[in-house]
Amino acid sequence: MLLNRTKGLFLLMSVLVSWASYSIILLAWAETEVNNNQTSQAQINLTSVEKDPPKRGTPPAKEGTGSRGDCIYQQDKPSLTRIVGGNQSYFSVKDYPTIWVYLPYTAQEATSGEFSLQDGDMEVYHTRFKLPSRSGVVGITLPSTIPALKVGKEYRWYFDINCSRNISSNNSSTPASVTGIVERKLISVELEKDLKTAKTPLDKILVYAKNDIWYEAITELAQLRLNEPNNSTLQKIWVEILNTKNLGLANIFQEPIIGNMILTSGDLTVSE
Image (cartoon, rainbow, N blue to C red; front, side, top):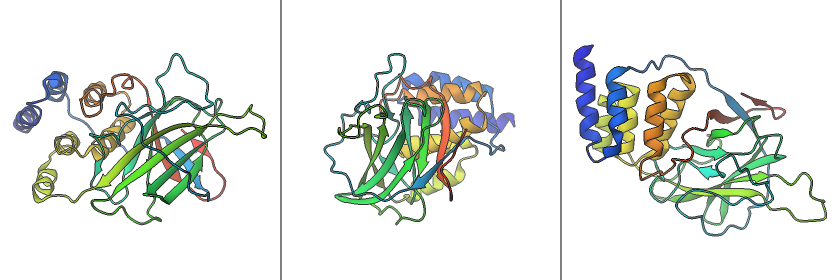
């Protein structure tokens, strides 16, 4: 056990040699092993709706924050923010990746949310959802009922939050909105080898991060944190990952991870 842990530490040091800010990760990993046997997590349920594709403009700047629209400014919370999908964090190797955003609004502050995925001018997927009872980081996994992402093609996704419950139906409303991009790439021979030889979940996360596969790096780490919300080691690693130059999300790391959005049949419900 000690030998394996020592080897893991040296591997991590070589992976993060250019990441000077990762001293916390090195120390944390040397002190603690992550138990990934638990599988429970909070889930937010979605239901699909049909809607004409919206007219979209240029994605926002690289800092990842969206527009506020008609939603009230939340002075004590970060803005609606994408976690992945920026100019330096848009690669995935999955057919159906999970997209992560920070939602500052709750069911008490917004009537509904909408998520859509577009291939150029064509809307590939659209769904409507109720917001959770608390603000935090949420993910949505693209459903297998839509075509798998094509390798080398850039898609754009949009989260819209409707806060216009007090606006007259005669007036148009503007949702809070954030957008990002996702592009699927093939798993290279080297990446496949590194993933197969990864001995722990953290090894796997760092392999993804080293190769700029940020969708999977964040998804794997978020899942670990959902399984073990009180694990201080995972909290430290989450902080360091969000603080990398690729993500630049120092204002988000203290926010809770709520869960992964899923589609269910029947009425729309939200469970946390």
